[in-house]
Length: 228
Image (tube, rainbow, N blue to C red; front, side, top):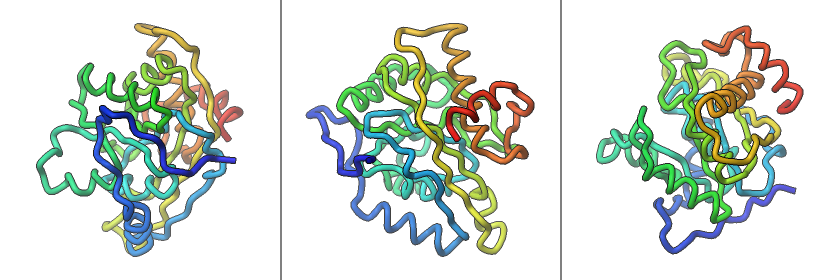
């Protein structure tokens, strides 16, 4: 059975405390603005693991929180720190990260989270998709999962891009089954290969019109056999 109890926190915890109101607030937001449906939450294993999902909208945050365990720590772009968006991101405990860079400080913080037995949430694309489909994944999630030797749990969100643009659109948050990448200090081509596996696992949980740059990738069918 999944362990949904709050996770322990090390003395040098790199993130803020998750608000105890984050789950009810998120559920209320999604109920008011969409026809929100969750699938596959029973697939969540005991922590630690890296929870990965696609990124279509700011509303991915409240759509994700109800399907993840209490105490999850997410990564958030540093550019939003100090802006009107910061309270929105702080619905979860978080680590600030500089986008599109090898942010070693954020990677070390992410490893500390996993080593402490806590779930780390990562959007491997690194930014919101402007196309409505998956964009090229970045290697941070694969790096962290292999270095910490923890499972990867893929999730797919869709319909969030329609929130506030359509009256109460259908929004799906779908969690897949966990899988593992080879343990070790992967780099270069190996890290790219593992990132592709992560992205194709997410694609396997999405309708085809959301596959984006991974459309037609044969690895999607392979990962579908694992994560569905």
